[in-house]
Length: 146
Image (cartoon, rainbow, N blue to C red):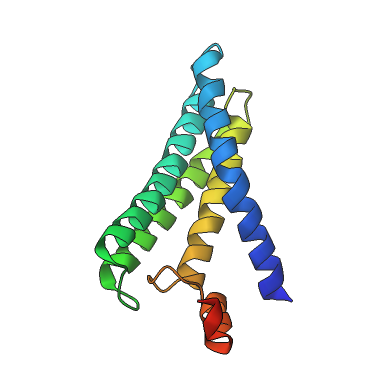
C-alpha cells in the first residue's frame, strides 16, 4: 500500500515538476523583479532545485552513454547525495522566501519539494542500471516482456 502511494506521488512529481519549473523561470523572466531578501531567497531556492534536476538528467544521460552504473556505485551515491543536498538547500531557502510576496515563492517551494521527492525516490527505486526493483521483478517473472 505504501509503495503504491509512493509510486503514485513519484509519478506525479516526475510529470509535473518540469512543467512547474519551466513555468517558474518563465514567470520570473516576464514579471517585474521585486528585489527583497525573501524574493532573492525564493530565486536561489528555485535555482538550487533546478540544479538538482539538471544533475539528475545529466546522471541519466551519463549512465546511458557509459552503460549504467554498478550496484550502489560510489559515484552514483555521491550524485544522489549532491542532488538531495541541493534540493534540501532549495527547500530551506524557498520555505523562508514563501513568507513574503514574490513571483517565485510558490514555484520555488513546489519545485524544491518535487526535486527532493524525486531524488529520494530515484535513490530508493533504482540501483543504477536504469531499472527499478519492480521492473526487474516483472521481467524475472515474464522474461518475454524484456
